[in-house]
Length: 113
Length: 114
Image 1 (cartoon, rainbow over the protein chains, first blue to last red):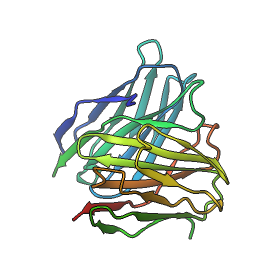
Image 2: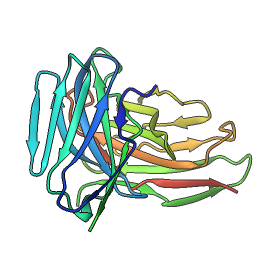
Image 3: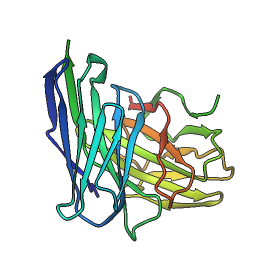
């Protein structure tokens, strides 16, 4: 079962612009995580936000979480060509199978130099 | 140099053949996971294990089997019962499966049926 749903499916921007990706989910969560995947490679963890947090920053990344709307957003500021990748949200569900991370289908980001 | 290693990177399987994908981690993580990734489908959970000698089915376990005899190792066997095994397989591990910690991924194995 796919829990998270990212929006948009694909995003193309110019270097220096900001990129915003959204994730919606269906059930109560313990935490929500964002991962990045370069083409043909494994995923790399970017940031984790717990259900009692509303906003978190890490470098050029800003994540928000709205549990009332069951949604999260990932903002990448001042994007670079090297940010080109697919971005996935993953939820660890409250009361669900322990440690079962459920991933969305991802947003494919293309940053043009 | 700590990490999670998957091998081989590319694997070709003939019809009716079982193949085993290797996943090894030296991060001292308790939990390990296998995901399958198809184009446009995101990641789907096949099996996961929270502790040695214990594992649970994920959403798409049919046609797959696993073992967890050692903490460091979580091999995945794709059996002949899996009718559409061509996909990108990702192994991951995390320190404590119930603590909300990040998952570390291997670089993946691309399996193709020939």
